[in-house]
Image (cartoon, rainbow, N blue to C red; front, side, top):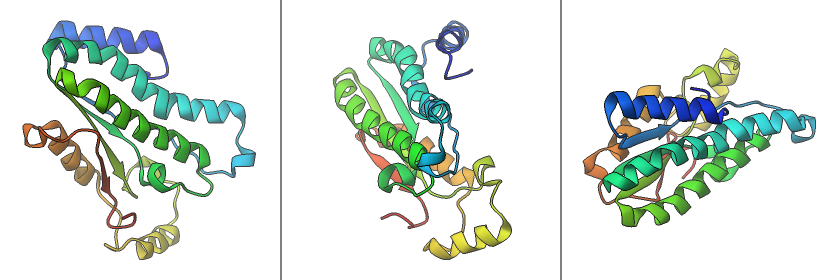
Length: 186
């Protein structure tokens, strides 16, 4: 599904509901990143990033949320970033979009809690994914020196945090941001 295309989102959500029944769990994890000075970012680059990282999560949620509200249950986990919590130089657009995801999470959690829908957020730190592929070994080593746990996170560690927030073990948790960053942002 292309989260930047409303018709793609609608087709996908309708297909899922028809094949698998009403969705009660959602993880919004589509995202792109770019490192550049803010003044070097074109309007098109900025809008592409915001449309993917923030508006995409909102669009998919809006398509799925009616199913959850009708069922009076559901859990949504939005993926933000530690940079959405504190900002990052040379990632201003990304930081702003991910901060928007946090605001979206908190506001929607308040709105949907009476309907039995929980909304939370995971804010990963540096994780060994394709977004880190452009870093040299030296850059990664220097980054690890800044992380209190001394290493880059693994995708499975983020997945475990998401799985917990989706589970019934988190049934009284909503509107929260869980930092999974090796102690880099406290």
